[in-house]
Structure formats: structure tokens, C-alpha cells
Length: 259
Image (cartoon, rainbow, N blue to C red):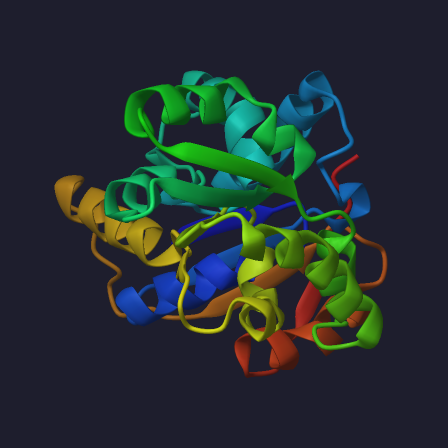
């Protein structure tokens, strides 16, 4: 079973890519909505949540764990790999391909403040963006709007425009999305950028990595496909309402407290 988790619903953008790439595999997705968003939380708290979620998903039969959250990857993937004995895949802003493909030498990264300030992003910039100007911008309130299902409301549109419009005068030609919630706002981002700027969503690359690791470890889905959705919120109905909107199909959602 492929296990995935995020602070909330953003990781469903990765779920879509993994399901498309590995259609015969069962997938369990856990949204830690009781603690969403992770961005304002401290590193120790994010690590503690990651270990609690990781151990729970292992107990449910996980073969591989996908940390479908940039903030959790940044803060906790080392701790997860030290404590859990299964393959673990994290996610990070697609700075490398964006910088490599830039013609103007100027790109932008959209992510949470936690991710933008992280040592991991600094390493990505040092290793892959030498000679490229990288404008780092936080999507304030974007995560909360996706969680609320407000993908096209005027408030969401205003929040997106407030961040993206100022970039249009900066001669950028690529934008790397550094939060799994942000791909759900791509239509609003495109309203501002048009088609002249390339957006990089790392979800497909993550799906390829998951497939590679499963093959390397000799794992077989055994044809037992199912999709399971879990929230740590007491109200599973709220997440159930969002699934058709975000992944195009309704599914039952379980509530599981992990306190």
C-alpha cells in the first residue's frame, strides 16, 4: 500500500499524479487537518506529528510513505527516515528545473514562509540556482482557502493577485510551486501570468520516484486496488465534501484522532 500524508488537502495534488502513474496500487491518504496549517508551527512540533502519522500509517500496512507536504519534508523527513524502516519520498520546490530552463535568469518560488526560510531551500538555491535571481514569495492565506474549498472565490483571487501581480514586472519566466496546495490555484495564477510563464509542479516527478522505489524494492501491488482517505479532524464530512472538487470523485472519509 502507498501511504501519503499532508497537513491537509494539498497533498491531493500529489495523490492525483501517483494514482495516474500507478493505477493498480492501493493508496491511503491522511490529512492531518487537526494541525493544519503546519507553516506557523515549530520544527519540533512538526517532527512529532510526522512521527505519529508515520507510525500510524506503517501500522495500517504502508509499503512506502510519501510526505506530500513541503513543510513536513523540510522539517521532518530526516527524523522519519531515521525511525521508520520503509522507503520514504519527500517533496521540495522545483527550483532545479526552473533555474535550469530560465532564459531571463530570473525565476520565482511560491511557498509557505516556513519552506522559504528553510535550510533545504537555501541548499537548493546554492546547488542549482547559481547565477539565477530567485524571488521568494509566500502565498499568505492560500492554504486556508484551498482547505475551505474556495478555489475561485473573489477573496482567493485577491490573495493570489496580491502575490503574483507584482512579479509580472520582474522579468521572470518560470515559477516553481513550493506548496502542494498551490497547484489547485493554478487557474487563478494563470489569470495573472497568462501562458508566457512556465509553472513547475513537482507532483509528476514524485510519482515517478515512487514507482522507481517500488520496483527497486521488488514490491507488487497484487492487484488489490483501493483508495482510503483519513482525516485527523473530528469532522470527516468536511473533507468528504472537498474530494469531488479536488480529485473529481467522491470517497468516504474516516476520522482518526492521533493525539
